[in-house]
Length: 403
Image (cartoon, rainbow, N blue to C red):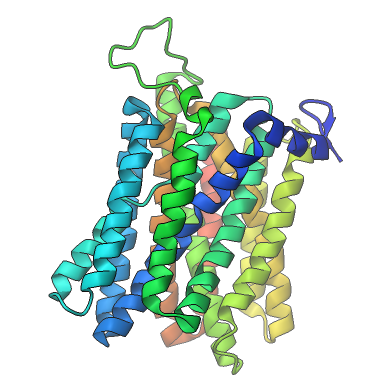
């Protein structure tokens, strides 16, 4: 298996990453983003346990997600202007302080105060994943494909391990410790990521741009159109993720396996990780729009199979099939985003794409869960198909815009 764009084997492309950024960077960027998948669930678990109300826990978790969706692009824009190091360190201090305050006060303060603290925790949650992609763009354009594939696999693993870690710690120790563990990971690994030498490589946004300095990958109108398509695609990807989670959870419950939904989704993510790593070997003749549309079609076919599946083995077969295309789709969207950024503005675009996924997951989970409650898992899986079809249509429009 080779990376046709450089003539190297795919293995050599991945081996270049530690020498390019250092093992310390790979460790920091991997563990530094783990709290993103932990904090909302940890707040839900702790708030529900401390107040005895799942309603309060749900509102607090929603406030965390909304805060993250708002805070991520704001932090990205500020990092473009001030530099990643300063913004990340501010985020570390505020996030750790808000998490500790939440642990110390939950159950002893009005629910509104607890929800506000949860929102602050989400607002200040450091966006290591998007900002790491920004650094790869600054480090080496030649290695971006392998670097983004690595980032995609780390994201998949994080969203499997993070929630499981929260559950294990909450049961073995306490819900308070699960949130404090996420705060400790932020204090250690996000700080390491913020202080790493690669932060200095990212160009900042010039307040007085010079035509000779600003690099634009696309003409202005087309660039904005493609940015809108990427953000729409990320929202569709999020709906796909959220509806898949809701559908697989509902299917597991219907089969008398109420606790197996997360495991079903983990199986889906395994296929995604494998194909994401293999994407570096695709020939450049298969352009981004072909990859985008092809992956979306594969996701839709997998969704149709899950909708019609009568048994657990068959639904898992189609879940793996759909998952095999979801990773390449997300990788392609990030690649298109990286190709259209202006010098000094990568942070805001990459964090906006992340917010699109977060919002989409919220929509997909809520709509898919409500649909599954009334019509069964097939309704949630139908939303998976709809999101995939929308993603394919956006890819087709993107191809026309590019031309």
